[in-house]
Image (cartoon, rainbow, N blue to C red):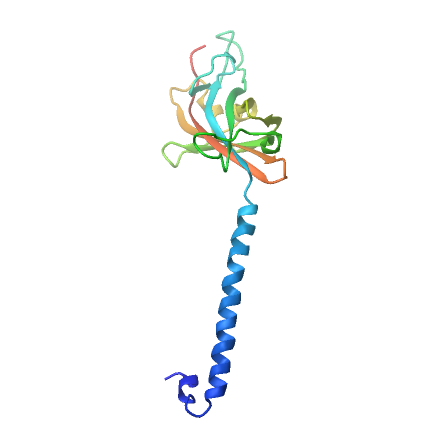
Amino acid sequence: MRPDAMHTSLFPTVMRSTVLRGAALVLAGALTLPGCTAAQRDALGSSYLIIDSLTAAPGATPTAFSHNLESDVCQRPDPLGPCFVMADRGQVSLRLALTDPGIVTNPATPSAANFITLSRYSVRYIPNDGVSPVPASFEGSLTGTVTGSGLNVDVVIVNAHAKAVDPLAPLALALTSLPATAEVTLFGSDQAGRDVSVTGTISIVFADWAD
């Protein structure tokens, strides 16, 4: 039995006062809930990023972009000469979407207040078998603003240094390959200073491909 129920018959006035105070507190708490929700909604940005495509090209053919990358760990212009390494570049096609786009028959279009400015990106590798060693993650800088017309940005998918050290360097002259997935994340902020990011992936096969 609850303590307040034990004393109901003895102190009815006190009980009514306690109940009224409790009801007032519950009502006050309920009245504050919409304010918290509104504050949380206000923290959301008015726009976000969508990756339409993520492509990459081998260092030796920098304009041959594809949705899969054959990353050559060794370039030999002279079959008997030394091994050269070249970075593989990627291209990300981005567009802007509105958090609240309006009604279907009359959708809103992005304005300058919705634009998102990019500042950096990161690349992380994931082995397809889940256990093989892969190159270290890295970050790069970039500058560009995604407007209502979208934006294409260039990034480095595999840097040259990674091909000169383990685990990629031993693949030179070897008849083995290392399949992996590159996870590319772009970071920026909207015009109100809120952080924005978006992630895309692309398949890579590291090997000493024929020159």
